[in-house]
Image (cartoon, rainbow, N blue to C red; front, side, top):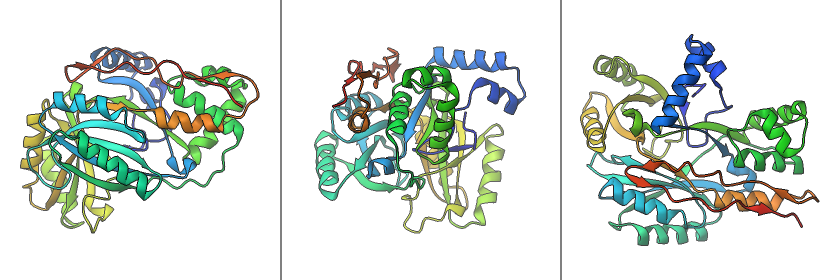
Length: 343
């Protein structure tokens, strides 16, 4: 599901289906699809998310971390964050982005329209923080995008954001295009880094964590990698993007990521602490572990401003709730379907 073998906060590229996955891993398509359905039942995989390049809105992205005492407190905090204007997503993590202290927290991604907007959001996060301990904000540099969107592009994006798991033929019917025309425009949007997709997963349900490593020197990378392979023979290499804030002199040649077993917050913290002692490692941090939440309100409002078709168009911009529970707590039901009426 990660075609280039990388994780990034702005998606991983085109959406990949069971047929393509089967070709990559040498299995029958039916076997791949059966595994994906089992993942869905177990709450590990819940389809794909569409990630937009926020350059199309003329804003940047920032992230911050809020320390909490436990995962239940973190789930409560994520419910509160959903109401903060400009907060786009939140996820539970174990560890710390700057140290190896034993902490749990909530990672927050938000838009950056202006310094005043950012300062206001940081004050709100400080008030919401149970421990009054907030780190950030840190910058997030996404892929370049210079495409000027047409009204048709905005209609396609509205349909994609509302229904990221729709087939091309279904999405084409929603927008009112032929399949061939939709595929051509959609491929151009993906190729120009306007939109990309990522699997919606909860690594904690599979007993795994994605860790990023920052080595002291580029020559240490191979040695650290071999040490990890000896300890975790079945680990999965993962290129981790979007971690440029972890050190002032960030050098991508000294960074890499892996997926390794971890079944609890305590186990994640223990891994971070132990692996940070490996010779040549400067910093280890978890990128993905616990439940993640997307808050689409800000994006929905900005897309609605660009829908200029004369007819009345109704897009379900907030997907229906799956009703799953995250970390022992039910997720809040999303808002009702938003009907967009162009002027």
